[in-house]
Length: 380
Image (cartoon, rainbow, N blue to C red):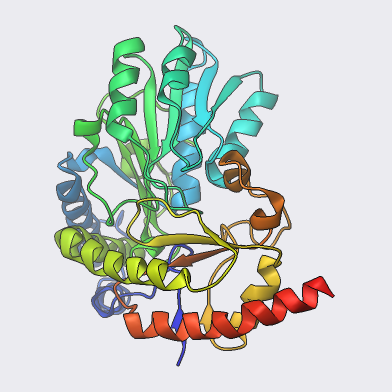
């Protein structure tokens, strides 16, 4: 039996999502900027999708900008804010555990003369709020912090962060990477003081290659993709109508059943975390997110264990899928103080509504056989 536990990397598309995408491609296939009937049909799909997504966030429809996914949304938020506000200041704050689509734009901006402060986290991956408060200055134009860490599942205190920013410098823009959090934990941007929020469709059983950026009304941000002026000039390019249709369908399903889905996923994850303690010499780094479990196996290379599990049709991850094809030291695992003997043997097991406790039993049985064998090989 195939066991897929890499849902933080991508998820299986819901059947309902496939249906609306097929309809958009087969029936309403016009260009949404066209003035004829087929174009209007496509335009209506985009309008309806924006309405559905805005409703899940208690936001205004005009505050939703469709993108090609999480990486573009994060880049748009960070670079667009930096370019639009650089005359007011060049100081930006982020954390040491962000996704590559956040820290790479930060590195780029540092080369362009911006100053970036990287906040520490504790052993659970939670950001240092005192350091945040002390770091906000008059020239701080942006704070960027993820909602849920993609490697260990730490859930950041977003509302507290928003409150600190509002207190210290209300002109500072607050960006939240909610790519791992939307549809899994409640998040209402206005309640949390969020100005910009990124999201990606394929993390919630929607299609790849589409996402959105929530942009609070009157937030100063510069467009990054220029051209035909679609989406009121904020993101030019013909809209991905089938993708947007599938995205909104997935958003409606996940947000509409958020509590019950989180409970179902969380129960399977907690069962896994209770069973994994049967394996000796491990460390559980998991945060409070309902869908992510980070487990470190002492003195075992994560890639070796990953491929041994793959041979048994069990699919997991050794870290962020977006950078897993390049050998690197995990910034998140280093930031939480994990020692190399555990850090190098860390696997991420991530769950969805499709996973079951029976699958967990299959994984544990495989690990009980593989881990002692691999450790014996290493110690020779």
